[in-house]
Length: 477
Ligand SMILES: Cc1cc2nc3c(=O)[nH]c(=O)nc-3n(C[C@H](O)[C@H](O)[C@H](O)COP(=O)(O)OP(=O)(O)OC[C@H]3O[C@@H](n4cnc5c(N)ncnc54)[C@H](O)[C@@H]3O)c2cc1C
Image (tube, rainbow, N blue to C red; front, side):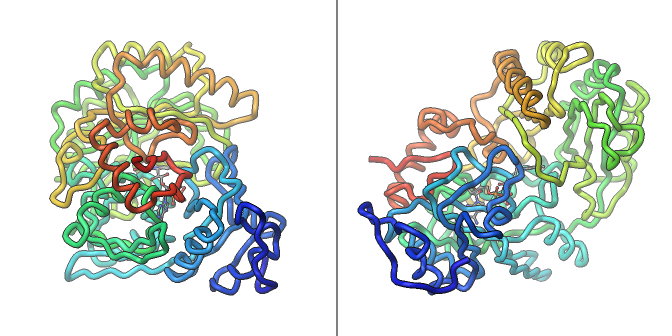
């Protein structure tokens, strides 16, 4: 770690040439400045997907907005690109080797204003931290399936909740105020009224437009829900998914549901009935009357006998119990895309690819039903591109290098197999590190018109594409 040292030493291209070169950075920021041979560097660069490490030239552990400003200005002076990491759940290939990485996990402000029903967070806060605070005052945020995920990264990528999504839309739809440091080192306070273009671009454009240091968003008066999961033997997947498929069009917006075909490890952290098992996990979150929630689950329970049933009335803080996502990082391969429908033909193909006897190597192949408020444009417009996409699928696996190779092959088979039902748009938060990397793919992801507006704004706010370690929007010429 560098605390002080000599003046900046420049190489011929303007970048600092050695460790001493970063000395002025150490003077300018309060947080740690770490180089690759520092002991703490590895921890600071850690990612959830252990096969996608970040290896930046230098890391700044930001402790304040001023640190972020100093780091961005320093990177600008030396022609370095800037990468950002909070909890490290969605790192995009490549590994950011020449970059200055700003880690935001020390930005720990949380304030809850029950009167205005708003929460303000620093960029390092996770949903678990917010849930602890909002639960006490009977309020609920549009949190995702995994409470250990960072609030800001999740929200900038849309933010799809397994409980509130179909009722209230994306988390991005309820943001009121953003503090962001743009590529020129300016601190901007952005609202839909003060700067509608940048506000629109940030919410959906994720890390492309600057480093968000603080964010304020609406929370909602809710304290309990009905939900959890039903696990069935994999062999009974067909009748249960037939019931799930038939249920979806009957649901009103206060219910959100998904399923996951799981081949679980024989791990002690799992309940006995799930260890090493091939199962279908159906998830349900319902915000209305508890008895109605139980009635919604009836056709699922009637289709086969669950080996585990955790559906119950719960405090809102237990939103993570709907999916039971893994919390520890691991080497992963993954893919995801939107689906146009979930018809009998879609189910037939999914059965062929992932069902009993398919040889599917993935640990988890899920389908989430979207729709409801997720289809509506918000009052404060943003660039989230996935409205009108009725379903999405996400396949992920972890294991040894040999297993990961087999999973990569499967991803090709799965993508080709599901191609007839692939939707035009999808959700940014679920894009894999090596998906949508070319400009053409990112344009297709957003759609030509939305991409053109984003690229024009990128030209205004980040003309040199300093923030490029993301699903990158290139500045318009
Ligand atoms: C187990 C699991 C479950 C998930 N479930 C859901 C879900 O239900 N719904 C959903 O929508 N998503 C979900 N996600 C995806 C998740 O929302 C994204 O991966 C999100 O980016 C994670 O936040 P993070 O703090 O880990 O981001 P990081 O990996 O640290 O950052 C990812 C990217 O976000 C951007 N970013 C992060 N912080 C900032 C900042 N302060 N300023 C500017 N850009 C920034 C950068 O581009 C960065 O590269 C899930 C992910 C996992 C691993």
